[in-house]
Length: 567
Ligand code: WTA
Image 1 (cartoon, protein in one colour):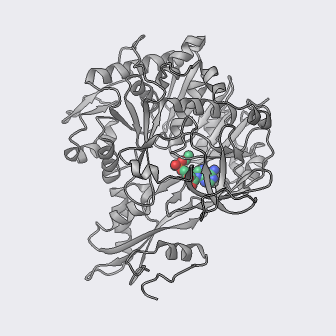
Image 2 (cartoon, rainbow, N blue to C red; image 1 turned 90 degrees about the vertical axis):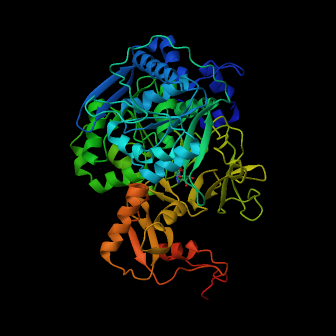
């Protein structure tokens, strides 16, 4: 029996107080996610239950019970407190998927500070922009990533502490660096958890938009109310589950459903700190007897590509429920997974800004492969006419996906950018920036984004950020960045560039430019192709028309070009 029971019944009787009651939270009480995810579970008598099963790329294992993560997060909180970290200070977590990346967040939240996870793949500029915007006070990192922080330290006067979790005492520590070892720290049984309230800030998640620098999405502790109930009803987490969320907490999926959701439910979760490989993933499922698996379309397509023979080598019979997020889940992937694992991946749709699943398929509900499913009970979702911002009164028309504001995990603002936040609302609706249609049965069918943001393997890349970085290369005069179709990653980054006089187009230069972006931003943002052009299509006012280049890449109609300069 699934946790949601009948979707229709849940819909009819829905009230967020269902979640509040289960969490034992009453409006006005203190609410601290760090406490909810560790101390509360221990108080329920589940302290000896496993909270985290961790494995490294070399096969090293670590296991943590709820008592362990409670005490370890207390130790981290006390350490941060000792450094002078104050409530609402931003503390960044910049590591591979090591246990500290997960438990560290609970420690940060227990001090009342705000957690800021950043992908360990980020380098110089990507890291700097996000730490500078957030005015981050401390960064928790590993030896191997510390050099990236050192490089930008001069430009970050507010970054007071660089906490190294695996310091070996061999090389001398540098300016502002301090060691902290979870293994050597004295476990602290009691820490006075800071009494955050529902609206106290909890997390800052950076996400890329079409224009401007990445925006810091501010979430609050009350988001727990959404994350708990969606974990229960959509991910269908149950007491004996061994849950695996493949997402890195640098991405919102890895915090909402890789930390907060499962641990607030007292579930055992497993983490594999290794890159993708079909064999390694299947082996991991077999070894830990994974029952619930939350992953992403690119990973599923990569598994499909690896073929069906490799699946047969492993016992995957433990799998009970599968779900996916981040990009359109193509019908073939749904059908394939049903055939191969005996379970279909259920598509879920949401965003960094929404903090929790908004539209999805539910266990027990009829699946229409290719559809994202229906709105979560308590969420009013619709598609709007892009001209009037009014919901369509007929089904089947493509419009803008919009949500009625007010659910618990809705972002509260973009950090230091209230204007961009306000621009997300029209006519009383929150605009997701995506397009879809709704069929007669209320199922949503994703069509695409309504902006130029590139979704490569589930990661949002801002064309603006890549274009700006390209212009810093000495050979490049102008640049335009668009997506290009890709069979596995759905989209990849493609750059069109014009060269400055004296530079000649060549394959060597193309590789050099790609590397330049990889080192400046991250491997995710690196263009997979650079096309040299004589000129870029521009409007009469000089704005580069990415739309034309995009249409060419996707073999679509170019549309209205009346504003083109070189007509
Ligand atoms: C896209 C990820 C199609 C969409 C949790 C959205 C999806 C953006 C789906 C948010 C899905 C997410 N089908 N597209 N099931 N889920 N997206 O902020 O464009 O990293 O706006 O949050 O990913 O990406 P973000």
